Length: 180
Image (cartoon, rainbow, N blue to C red; front, side):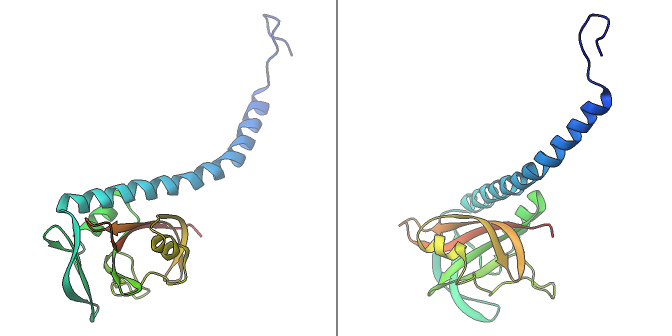
């Protein structure tokens, strides 16, 4: 129907209907982008917090969940059984964070806020030896995508921790539990 100036107008119900359809199409796409951005922000934060402590390195061994593993340090700060950094990341941006140390062919959680079913920290558990993340890390690459962690789906990021010589000595991890 034309208005006073001879221009047509679209009834409000049509505009609202089109808007509703557009939201139903595009909102799911936008919501998938959000966790990826959160993962990247959390990874940047985790790496920045550890970098402030100093260069990563291995100094001797330390028991984690009763198992002897290499002792991961950033500067003079021992990371094994030290949850300050991973808990700060969780407090500031949410999600979960872990620092793994390379122990033989495995990567062992030495500092984490990922929880087991009983609510305890999942320290001493290993990065899935058959997962996509470990394959990328072994190739010297990062992995960003979905991963199953202790039986639960997460949107994740994994990056190698390298010593000053460029050797992979551990893994940075951040992730968010997927909505189910």
